[in-house]
Image 1 (spheres, rainbow, N blue to C red):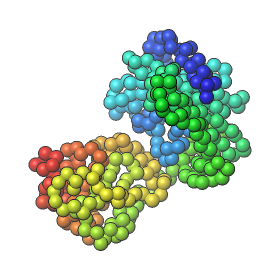
Image 2: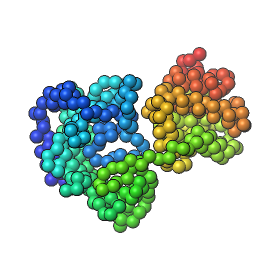
Image 3: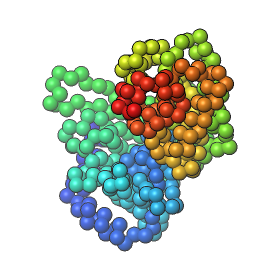
Image 4: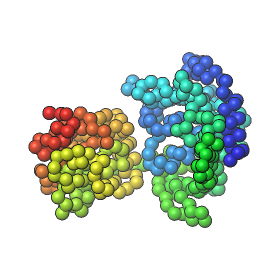
Length: 382
């Protein structure tokens, strides 16, 4: 690990006095070879130095390139005359928050994540072979501000290419700073994986397959090639059918509230049997661990995301900024009531984990007023 620490520290020393803002202004003013994307994924959006973090998120997206930017964007990318990424911007709530710099030195990429008004936030170093394939990648944990003396975790990605198989070792090196006196030092952890087509396999210590799942891309000659998952899937029909299966399993349970958790595209459903109007009844945090996943196919959350994205919805906020999704779900809940799968005296809350005015308005559309009287009173809506 000491070698890795030194390699990253050398990158820090090289750029610690670099005038990033002047360099940024020069590129952003003169460069017109740009792309844009939406979807707040990783720190560098579609152009992460290594694809390992993305593939470990299964079917989760790191965003999508967009052509029309009149509705705003989350990332802007700059390319040189050879279409090589040299700089990108990351926006949060419409404001520029991070600038990513890509410096190429022979077969090495030195990546600096720069926080506006704060300085170097994170960095990494990637090595490429003679066939322009990434073979080694070093980074600190992305959520840590770079501190040469106090970083506690260093990440290493090793790549090996064999015919149509990409072998990957994810190595986590733990470092206990001297000021953490008495802390037990962690050991190095290794996760072995391989990609075949667009399937990611997790391997045990003997390199036998222990689990696998589809991802959004495959590796061809060391390069990422996106593999769009099927879109011609009646996803809301599937949601309704799967809800019916769950509700039939719960048929003999006297449910007072059914909560459909839309915090993410991995939709879940929970219930409580509490009758008295109190915080425990109307707060999912107090529910027993009885949640069921609405999707039983790993591809379906991605299908839903693609559909919503193409419908102009913000997939990071399904309740407040995805009217298309909400209208479809309201229709499904009303149908389930009409068909007898949900009784009139069972409240249904369609929400994420933060109750908003929109959450209450949705509840009013799918429940009788007396059924959700306590819910409305608790959240100050009359």
